[in-house]
Every structure is written in C-alpha cells, then in structure tokens.
Image (cartoon, rainbow, N blue to C red; front, side, top):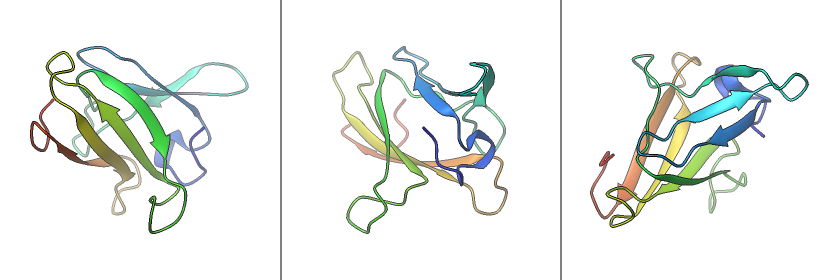
Length: 109
C-alpha cells in the first residue's frame, strides 16, 4: 500500500510484475481499477528488468523514508543483482526519481 505522500499513486495498492520490462502499477483499493504506472521525470513508465520485490522504507535513517519505494531485481536473467529506490520527485510531485546500486552498475536494466 502506497503512503499518502507518494505522488499520484498515493494510497493505492502497488503491484509489480516480474518480467524483462517490469513495471509497478497502482490500483484503487475500493474498485480495483488501475490508477496508473510509476513514471520517470520524462513521463515514461519506469521499467526494471526482472523486478523481484518492492517495499517502502520504515521511516528511520536506518531504513529510509516511508515514501521511498525500495526494490530488488535480477537483470540478465538473475545473473546480476540490483537494489534501488524510487522516490517522489520533490519539484514536480507527479513523477518519480530512481537510484540504484548493483553488480551491473547504476541503471543496468
């Protein structure tokens, strides 16, 4: 469940798909309707190769802000490991910024 300060997908149920073009979609909890897909600053859907899991930060300096969405992935069919975070872009509140650390280097999807 996205927190109430997660941009256009606030208070939605986030569902990730584990494919070569993994996206994260938000759904309305009451109706089940698609609200939208997490997008980058250019308005394009963020695609994370072999997206494995997503989890929001716990709200401390040790585990991130509650509106930071952490993810793991296995690009190159699981050969590489990737850990990253998606954050609401402070200047626009409509799109998301992305950072990552992984064996394949930043942005290796």
